[in-house]
View 1 (tube, rainbow, N blue to C red):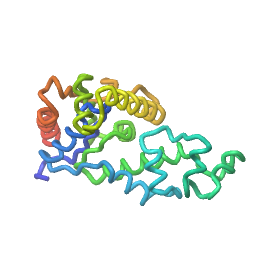
View 2: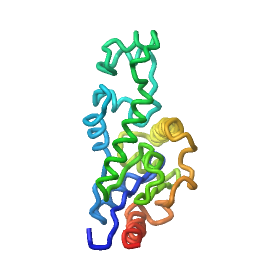
View 3: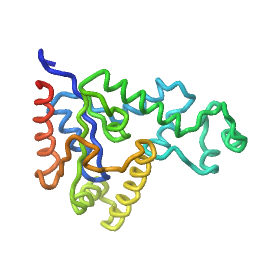
Length: 222
């Protein structure tokens, strides 16, 4: 970091297939920032005060923190007890609910990563958990539906267009439930973000990242 520059944190959110991941990757290359994606999961499990395995965290990652009793019983080491189903039935007060555990883990880890400076955080309500910080620029990435479908089909060539649309719809529903559950507000609303980028209208994810990089550099020197 050059003298006079400020440490910055960029949060990027968006619907499935919108190009957010591509924007984040290109932006990290342009700025030399650390891109935090799966690393968030690793750090969360390692530093969590709760007895939650990485497998359990991944199971509930970007979901509401809810599952059927049968799904709970299929998980190993979900909480401190090996018999989580009995804990649920007994409404045991010494077992931290998974939704609250996820909330605390995510908030702590995202702020820890942000404290380390110059990073890009993908999804996981990062804009919500880091709200109020002066070193954060929250970004919403969007694109036209047809472009989103094409990206998904490019990523998964075995999918038909119909299957790609179905996957997008299912994933977006899950992400919306997750965001609304933890953030307590509407998902993918431009008013929740400092910057909104439409990849298609800007000429693609790389071009969107280039424009965003300019805004970040201006903020660094501002």
